[in-house]
Amino acid sequence: MKTVQHDLVVLGGGPAGYVAAIRAAQLGIDTACIDENPRFGGTCLRVGCIPSKALLESSHLYEEATHGMAEHGVQINGVELQLDKLMARKDKIVDTLTGGINMLFKKRGVTPYKGRGRFRDVNRIQVDGDESVLIEAKRVMVCAGSRPAQLRSVEEDNDRIGNSTTALSFPDVPDRLVVIGGGYIGLELGSVWNRLGSEVIVLEAMDRILPGIDTELATIAHRTFKRQGIDFRTNTFVASAKRNNDKCIVAIKDGESIECDRVLLATGRTPATDDLGLESIGLETDPRGFIAVDNRFETAVEGIFATGDCIGGAMLAHKAMEEGIVCVERMAGIESHLNYDVIPAIVYTHPEIATVGKTEDELKEAGIQYNKGISPFGANGRARTLGETDGRVKILADKETDRVLGVHIIGVRAGDLIAEAAAAMEYGASSEDIARTCHAHPTLAEAVHEAAMDVEKRAIHTA
Image: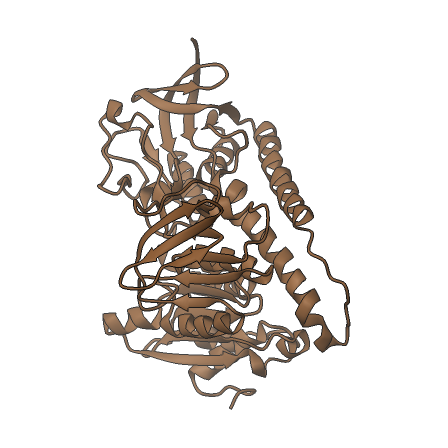
């Protein structure tokens, strides 16, 4: 078996891994990156964030063509859905971006290895692929990522009953789709197939959808998506889900069973830390499979680091990317940091939902006094011209200091608007700082400006 040496080996080529590898190479560290998949990019790029957003955009355009354009005076007849072309566009986007990582590795000098990487001991990793390689390294960063969580009672066959990856490539539009889980993954993919013509039923065990999102926004979202045709059933526990020929039967605890064409299991994600050989280096995980790290992202084993989904916290690609960068910069002696209180999160439904910082629920639970400013998109001129008046911007500021504690947006392009709020909060801005910043007119960003002014009850364009 061939033996090679590197200063740093990154085990996993997802957002945490490939970004860390590139940054490490920029800093002059001889870096290798291992991934068992044919393409680098991890879940997000291959079967998550990117392909799902491609489908969301295409399905939104289809819905606009069939229902939304008449309001603009554009009458379209004979609209036809060509699902194969829709899927081909999604695949092309993924291929382009994953190919881009290979190009970046080559340009930056990162050595890629394709295959399954496992620890032989603390300083050696064996890569089993087309050719087996033994890599010796002073430091290793584990970026194993996560995989869709499973339920024992749901019999997945990756066809009629599957997870988010399966739902990205349905060969046809199901007449009825049952989504188990009312979180962001279930709502995003449920929205895709709802727009394309499916009857979508979302089953959620909790008494609300979007756990973790500000309750007020989640309530508005529930009402909005229900108007769009999604059937929500909260406080609903799934007893089992089984395939029956070309149909599926979802049994409900203390309720009637549901027959459907396909089932999407979207009940969260779990760390993919098994089968890495961690036991051979004495590195233990917690009962859920997460790896514990210190503030330098170093594990209990000296020289072994970990970042991304496998260390817990918010399972977000951008959080993983920042952790990877901070980790290697600290290796290089740069006192980099990551502010976990200012990590935005976005749900790419329509309208979008974006949030950063504390929710009202969290502030109330902590006993923190705050002021609230709200600006509805119905009062925003740009939103009116776009025909997108659903939703609002909400800013929460400390009652004593006026420092912005949280910003929550539901509405058109909320995912873009949240960046201003995150930047402001990173620099410790007050609502007054945002209110005193001149925002261009007419723009959607004026809704953020107006909400900031409303914190002190001096909004101009809202009653």
